Length: 113
Image (cartoon, rainbow, N blue to C red; front, side, top):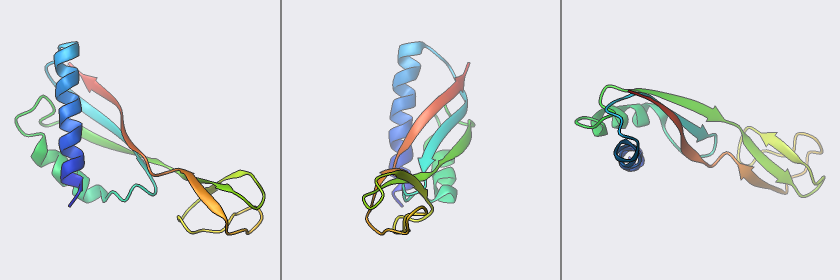
């Protein structure tokens, strides 16, 4: 379950920001997750609850924001939205696509007190 290590990384970021900005508690953490990031959302929620115990984010609500997958089609030379990593180009039907978005996962923002 790599979601546990992802959340451990988020905890380090949160704790660093708590020291820098002197906040006591995270109420909401918003995380952007790309379609191709290979993140299991139920596992991420479970890991979040476990890993954040004893931290400034204990009891925080985790909001996951889905990001679309995008690729550059080398056949028609446009950037298109794709549902699956190996989908053909929705415009020209070509199969030579290089993903340019959808693999990322990042903290978007936090509501803190």
